[in-house]
Amino acid sequence: MTARARCEGSSTRSPRPASRLQFLDGLRGVAVTLVLVQHVGERAFPAVAELTHSSLLLGQLGVMVFFLCSGFIIPASLERERPGEGRGRRFASFWRGRFFRLFPLYWLSLAVAGWLAYRGTYSPAAPMSGGDWLANGVMFQMLVGVPNALVAYWTLAFELLFYAGLSVLFVLGLNRRSVELSLAASAVCLALALGAGPLLGAAPPTGAFCLATMLTGTVFHRWHSGEIGLSRLVLCVVAALGSGTALLAAATLGAPQPPEAPQFLAMLTAWLGAYAVFCAGVALRHRRVPAALSRLGTISYSVYLMQALVLAAVPALSSAVGSAVVWVGATLVVSELTYRFVERPAIALGRRRDTVAVRPAAAAQLPVPVRPPAPAPVPVRIAGPVPLPRDAAVARRALSA
Image (cartoon, rainbow, N blue to C red; front, side):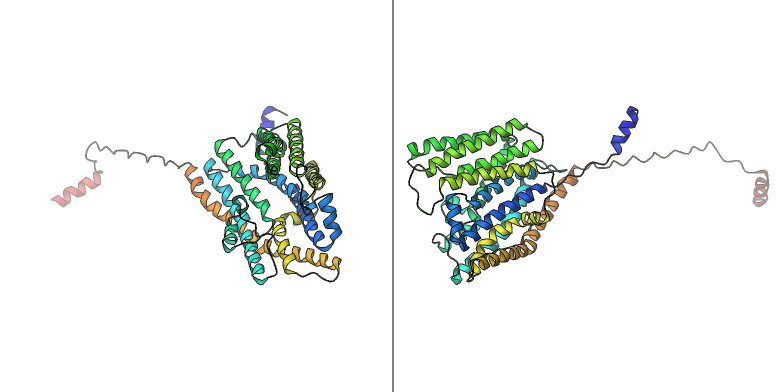
C-alpha cells in the first residue's frame, strides 16, 4: 500500500464514538445495594446491625465507592471541551448540570421528610427548628453546624465541597495535577492523625479521608485516560489507605467511643473494601455490566435518597423477612418513579438550558462568509453614429422629402 493510499484510508475512516463509562453504573449499583442492605438489614435484623457495627459497615463501604466514582467522573465532566466554550463557560456548564442533577430530587426528599415529620411518622436524628429545616435546602448545612434532616445528606455536603474545590483548581489551571493533589490530601490526613490530639485536644475529623478518597478517584481517571502510569496510581492508593488508617486509628482508638459508634475494625474493613471493589470494577471495565446492576446504578441517587423515607413511611410487618422484602421492593418502585418523573426530566431541562447558553457563543465562533465583490461594469464605448443599411438610408431620404 502506498503512502497516498494509507493517507486516503485514514482520512475516510469514521472516528470511534465516545463510549459511556458503563462500569461506573455497575459500581454505583453495587454501592447503593450495600447502603440499602445496611439500612434495611439493621432495621429488620438486630444481628445484622451488630455484625455491621463491629466487623464491616456495608453502608460506609458503599459510600466510599460513591466517592471514588465521583472523583473519577467529575474531572471528565468539568474538563469536557465543546466548540465555542472557554474555561469560564465550561465552569458554568458544569455547575448548571450539577444543580439540575442534584437539587430537584434533593428538595423533593426534603419536602417529604418534612411532611412525614409533621405527621409524626419520622423524627430526624437531632432536634430541628423551622430554621434548620429551611437551612437544609442549601445541601451543605452540615458544614455550618445545622443538623441534617436525613442522615444520608452528610455525603452530599462532601460532594459539594469536592465540586467547589475542584472548580477552584480548574479556574486556576491546577486541576490536572491529580497525583500531587491526592498525595497532599493524604499528607493532610496523616498530619491530622498525628497532630489533632496533642495540638487541638480533639479527635481528628475522619471526613478528611472522604475528600482524600475523591481526589484519589481523580488519579484513577488520569490513569484511565493515559495521562499517568500505573506506578503513580498505586503510590496514591497506598498513600491514601495508609494515611486513612492512621487517621481512623487516631479518631476511634485514641478516646473512648459511645456504644453506638462504629468500631475501628468495622470502618477500616469498609474503607479497604471500598478501594478493593472500585479497583475490581476498573479492572473489569471492558466487561459487560449486567442490565439489572446497570439500572440500579442509573437510579442510585433516587435509591439513596428515597430509602430512608420508605423506611419511615412503611410500617414493619410481623415477619422480619417480610418487612425487609417490602422495604426493598417499595424503595425500588419509588426510586424508579422519582427517577422517571423528577430526576430524569430535571437532567434533561439542565441540558436544554446548557445548549441554549452555549449556542450563542458557538455561533460567535463561526467564520462569517465573505461575499465576493460584484464585478465592475464594463463601459460600452461608441465610436460614432452607426451607419444605416443602404435600404434604410433610401427610406429615410424619402420620408424627409
